[in-house]
Length: 68
Image 1 (tube, rainbow, N blue to C red):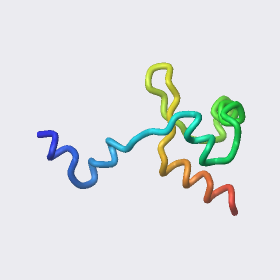
Image 2 (cartoon, rainbow, N blue to C red):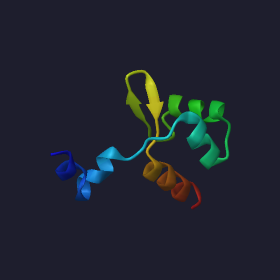
Image 3 (tube, one colour):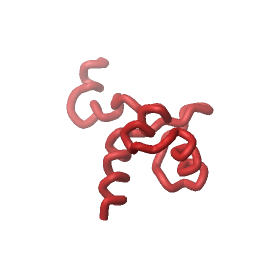
């Protein structure tokens, strides 16, 4: 059953989420700056309980949009 879920489009549902530290490293900013962006809703994020995480594809999209 899990194999069916993991195959194809549904594989993205299991995409690894990034922590503040990992996303900040990719964006070349301090984690504190990233926390401010989350507070002001300047960057997309996912909340899991009280934890904030970031989807790699959304981080890449944020970089692309910021480069314009």
